Amino acid sequence: MSTPFGQRLAGAVDARQSNVVLGLDPEPGRLWPDAYRAAGDGPPEQRLARAVLAHCHLVVDAVAPAVVAIKPQVACFERLGAQGRTVLGASCAHARERGLLVIADAKRGDIDVTARAYADAFLGETATPFGPVAGLGADALTANPYMGADTLAPLLEVARPRGRGVFVLVRTSNPGAADVEDLLTAPDDQPVWARVARLVAALATPGAPIADVGAVVGATAPELLARLRELMPRTPFLLPGVGAQGGRVEALGPAWAPGPAGGLVTASRSLVRAHEADGGDPASAARAEAERLRTTAWTLAS
Amino acid sequence: MSTPFGQRLAGAVDARQSNVVLGLDPEPGRLWPDAYRAAGDGPPEQRLARAVLAHCHLVVDAVAPAVVAIKPQVACFERLGAQGRTVLGASCAHARERGLLVIADAKRGDIDVTARAYADAFLGETATPFGPVAGLGADALTANPYMGADTLAPLLEVARPRGRGVFVLVRTSNPGAADVEDLLTAPDDQPVWARVARLVAALATPGAPIADVGAVVGATAPELLARLRELMPRTPFLLPGVGAQGGRVEALGPAWAPGPAGGLVTASRSLVRAHEADGGDPASAARAEAERLRTTAWTLAS
Image (cartoon, rainbow over all chains, first blue to last red; front, side, top):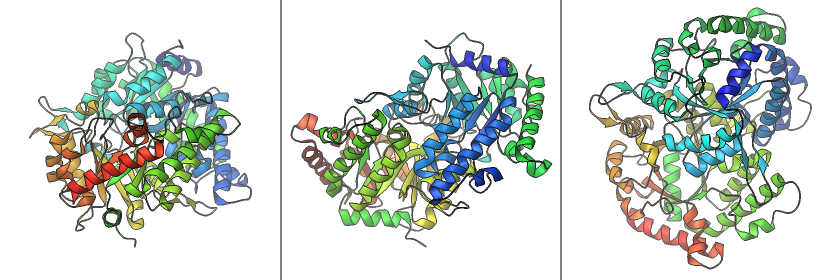
C-alpha cells in the first residue's frame, strides 16, 4: 500500500516550502521564443509538437525551484492531435525529474466502466491480454461531479492503492458558476456547491490531516472560502484563478486552516507571460514571478 | 456557412432510416477474436492499438447498415496511451467512409480558452504559426454543464460555423444522478436537471425543427422523458442506457415528438456482445441485433 495522497502532498509541500502549482496551458501562438526554434521542419502537427514540448521543458525548468507541482491542462495537449499524448507524457516525465508532482487537469466524469478507463489512463494502467499498458502516471486528476458520487468512486479505486488523488470541481472561478453550481437547493437554500462539498468531504479516507480527495475552488470567490473550508475541513483545495483571472492570494487564508498543503495556488499565464509585463527574458521573469508568488503564499500558509 | 447540425442530423436519420447510434467502447479483454489476430508483435501498447483498431473496423463494418452514427467513448481510446488518438482518428474516419456521423463522447467541460481548446481538438482545428492542425473532425461532442453556460459557449462557437453540434449532459442513466442532477432547487422545487434543460433549450439557434444543441438523457428514467421533452421541445436527445443498463426502447416515445431525429438510441455492449447471448459469429449477431433495434426504434419514431 502506497503512502496516501494527502500525506504525499503534505510532504512535498513541506519539503519544497511551496504550495504553488504551475499551470501548463501551452498556447500555440504564445510559446517562448526558444521553443519555436526547436520546431524544426515537417508538417505543422510535428513542428507544433516539438515546439510545445520544448516550451514545456523550458517553463518547467524555469519555475521548478519555486513550485511543488505542475498542472497540465489536458485540452491544450489534446488539440495537438496524434502527438498530443506523447508531448503530455514527456512534459510530465520532465516535471517528475525536477521533483514535482503532476496534477492532470482533465475534469473527467463518466459512469462506471468509463470512469475506470479514465482512471487507468491518467492514474493507473490498463490490463490487456498483451500485458499492462501504462497510464500517464499523474499523481492526481481533476474530476467533474455532475453525474454523482458513483462516477467518482472508480477514480478513487484506482487512485488510492497507488497513493494518487482526485480533485473534484466544487465551486469554480468562472462567471458561469452561477448557472448550476450556485443554484440554491431545497429545503434549506444550500447552494449546489455546498452539497458537492459535503459529498467530497464524505469521499475522503478518514483520519489524515490532509485528505486524499481534493476540491477545485476558484480563487476569484474568496468570500466563499471560509464556508467551503467549514464543509471540507481536511480537503486540499486546488485554487485556480490567481493572477490573470483576478484572484488575489492574500484573500485565500481559510484555505490553509489544515496546513500549508490545504491550499494549492495555481498560476499559469501570470508566470509564463511575466516577461511581457516585467521585461527580461521569459525564464528569468517567470522564475522571479513564481518565487514572488511562493513567498506570498507560503507566508500566509505557514 | 454549413448546414446546421440539427438539419444534418435529421437528414442523416431520414436517409438511413435509423436513429440508432453504435457506441464504440472497446474493452481490451473483450475484443472480437479476429481483432486479436491483427495485434501482431511488439510491445503491449502497439499490439493493443492494432487490435483495438481492427475491432473498431470490424464492429463498424458489421452494424453500419443499421445505424446513423458512431459514438466513440473517448476514455477507451485515451487508455491506449500514445497510440490512442491515432486509433480514435482512424476509427472515426472509417465510420465516416461508411456514411456515419461521429459523436465524440468525451463529456468535456472547462472555462473559456480551455473549452476552446477542446472544441478545436474535437470539432475544429487549431491555428498555429506553422499552419492549422486538424482536430478529430467529429460531428458532435458531448459536454458537461456543471461549470455553466459560459463553458458551453466556446464549444458552440467552433461547432456552429462548421455544422457541428454539442450534446449536453442533462439527466444521465446512472444511479448517482440522484446526487447532483436530481437535487431540488429553490424556490419551486425544480430539479437541477430541469434547470440545465432550460439552459440547453435556450442555447439552441431558434427555428429549426431539430435544434443544434442536444441533450444526453438516460434511457433508464423514461418517467422523466415527457417532462424533458416539454422543457426542450426541439432538442435531439442522445439516449444511452438501452440494453446492458436496463433501458427499454419501447419507453422512449416522447423523445420522438419533434421527429425521428429527436431521439438517438445508443447501444454498445448489447450489439458487440450479441453473439455471447445469441450465438453465431460476432459480426452477424451484432448486425442482427442492430437491425432489430433499428426496426423497433424506427417504428416508434416515425
